[in-house]
Length: 284
Length: 277
Image (cartoon, rainbow over all chains, first blue to last red; front, side):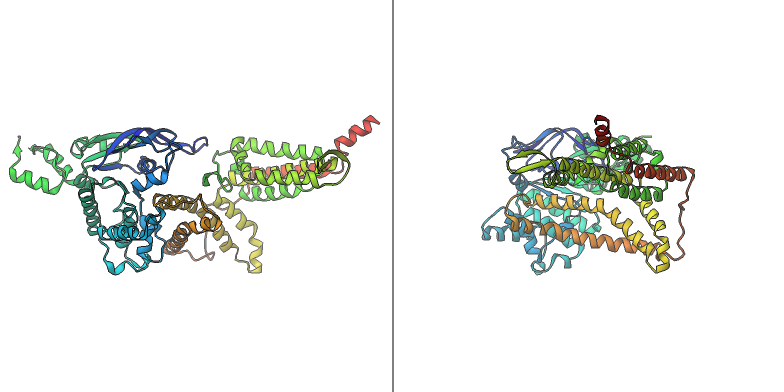
């Protein structure tokens, strides 16, 4: 069970003076149950790349294999792929259109032509998972608060019951509380349902805290593909491609400069706390 | 699919045509279009093609790019040409089943086809070499005399430039919403007409909402910068005719005079006929 991206290249506006290479020979494999972070500067090709994974964009060259079958082959039913590979776009609340939250979440399962009981089951489960109280289910989605709208939109994708969930900056424009809630709900989804999650993010803190594997894109190419701990050791290179490292990791680097050596690369505040309690060694 | 639309696109190349005053380009385009309908002879068309060809050359916009705009109207063009060919009465050249093709029909079709192609190339050349802002600035200046008649010239020009600016934004937005709904299993390609029309709702509702949202945001942003319409508004770039603009007008007058003159010349077939007899 995997999604395999093979030598994927994509040109925007091929054949015009505006043509531009957005994705440049990228390969990687996503296994079921993984929690992957995808980071990169604006315009590094992340958003273009993820739209290939469920066949919304056709690559200029290279391909994507879903459990070994080429999703761009003629025989493949892309709608089935799109059910298995759920994609939540940036600002997903901008796609809400129905009269009630419930009906909007129903849109996906209804497109799968499921029986009504199954639709109801999925919709209710999805709404529970994203933590929307039953009191708002029959309300118009446009009456909800920003964070609630975002949850409703994410529930719309979850109700398709995908095996892979790709989220493009799901926390953009949310306050810290909303951000933490959404991210921890995504994490628990992965843990309880065994979903594979790809999280596209600008926040080094978020990816450091949640993901097991980090893919870094720069100028359309895959620059790193490793654990966050390993990736964040490349401080200067990350800064040169317009990214950074988590603030706490940077603090650790500064301490090192002053001869205060902690045992490893620190990713979260909690790790720093524990490391400090264990005791750092001072190398004069 | 939405990317094929080239109308209103700008192609930066910094040529002399790009640098001309937008008023020159607007007036020239209008004059050129009117002249096209006065041309009745081969010599006239040859002259018009030569003129437009030289302007295209000067503009440094690749021909391939200009012709791409024609693709969108290919069907309309073919339809007009064929209809004209078949429906014009006159001296019969060819009879095929129920169709008769006349000499006059062929001429007519050829002229109409040429006229349309030249018209489209001429007007798309204007938008390809003029930014939307220049264009509306030019229109505003040209319409200024109407202000005395209490026509809200500035507001019309501002609305036009905003509308032009929003075309690519809304196209992009449509593309994004379509993809998002497709990710939820939406199907826009199959089904009968009514089903297809219904399938548009998940696109149209968010699209309208986003258009209103953007309009509201833009209005706030304009007010925050103290926009109050025309009164007391100055410009960073005042439109001012330069030497090259006067030369362009001169060339235009010359071309117009020549073209009108061709109407009074005998046409090539007539010349050949008079030579043969």
